[in-house]
Amino acid sequence: MKRKISKISEISTDYIPEERFKSAWDSIPELNFDSTYNKNWRTVQFLEYMQGCIQRRPDNLGLLKFMLQVDPILLELVYSAADEAIAYAIVNNVIELDLSFNNSLNHCYSLHPAVFSAVFSAKTVKVLKLNGLDLKSLDHVNFPSIEELNLRCCDMGNKLKISSKKFKIVEFMHCVGMSHIDVCSSNLTTFSYQLIQLSNKCKINLKACKSLKNLILKSVGLTSECLKANLSRLDLLENLKLDGCDKFEDICITSSSLKTLEISDFPRLKKIEVVAG
Image (tube, rainbow, N blue to C red; front, side):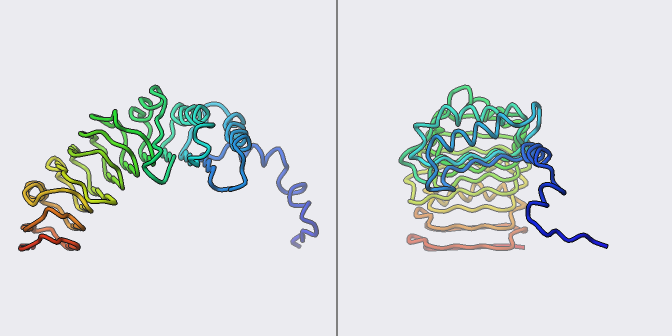
């Protein structure tokens, strides 16, 4: 006969001992710290919670995912603890690293130089998502293990060259400052570069991305010639989405693999020619 639980207290006393529950909770392979979750959370409370969770975790326990989201209002008060928490995640071989410090470009956060270097040279990170970071010093990076790179609302330098043999997805969302992007990855399948406002000038080189299947460009100051030069090397391209690329006067696409094409908001477009298999 199955026993019925008559009191809520019996769940903890008879079925899940408190100490065992705490041990299991502290051993969860994911850490998620979000200062925006509770609007009444004071800075001290957030710091105590974050530092307490880290201190209680067993030594040498790997991390599948580490997520840190800090409200801009608290940023100046928690920056040291934030850097320490990020360093902890990297030392513990985190696989997915998700850092968000702002939802606008007015207050981009600068990581401590040592932490900055560790983030971009980490050998276990496969998914890297960064929001609201100052990345102007980032110019040429060869990622050892990253498969998915997502940069959102980051302040970038003028030129950026990134490479990785393991890249599958690279996304830039609402980042500013770049006028030249060079991506080298023979295994990259998806590239997305989307801006809020139209950029004045931008050169994108994806010619080395022979496996690219999905390409999304929005409000990018790219010329028709630059697009044509890239597409001529992308033999496996299946999905192409172009939105608000103001400088385009004509589009010529020849691809035997192309399946879908989306085009919108082209005020100067005079001619479009598509030859697909």
